[in-house]
Length: 133
Image (tube, one colour):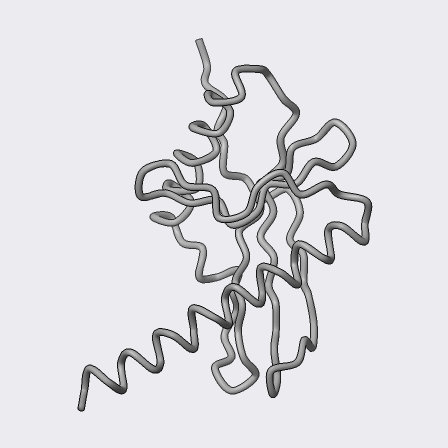
């Protein structure tokens, strides 16, 4: 019984998250961005969206919430999650093997009754630290 309940909830949240990522990708496309990758993985780390805006590669973490669930998606990106995002961004940059202008965004998608209510974009979140020689 417990497993069946857990499984239903897990499938619901997983599909909700995927829906939120699609809405966020559409939002960036409307702004003129070009989707380069979705759910790109480097080991256990993942980038939800990678978008090209002009000459800037934007790495996007999407947090989808329901009106019932509440809470800020931005706050869910804690130090551990930022570390994982940093590793994934560095892996992406190593893979393309060229220097790029980069930006990291966190996007909150709020859903009510399976309908999009609001997209809140936090641009230029500090994930990458400059190394001093």
